[in-house]
Length: 130
Image (cartoon, one colour):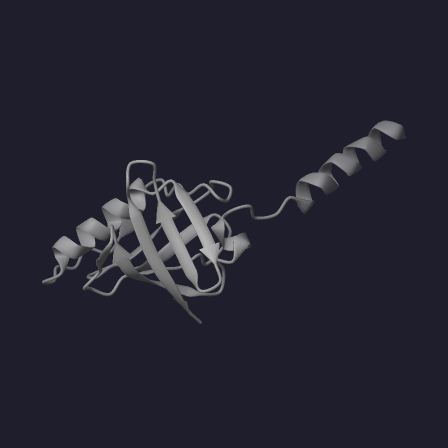
């Protein structure tokens, strides 16, 4: 009987482990709009969301995108990012945005501000809207 109790306790512990990503540390239930990329105002519209544990999504200047995000906070790692493939005049801004998301390795949520960065100088500043 004791091994069964031990197994049940282990399963309960696993079930209690929740989301440890940015989503769980202030990122959920908000649309984050990119305001600055590397110290310059980002002139196009780009958003980031954390719709479910382990997921990212949003709108780049031309296309919607989605991907996985499993790194525990404060780390940030997207893995492969998929997107729709529509052309538009802001495709260069889109490529810069998606490349920056891919390069980000750290996240910091402070109130209505989300900062994604890395150790080589990348800084993305987002503001939240509900």
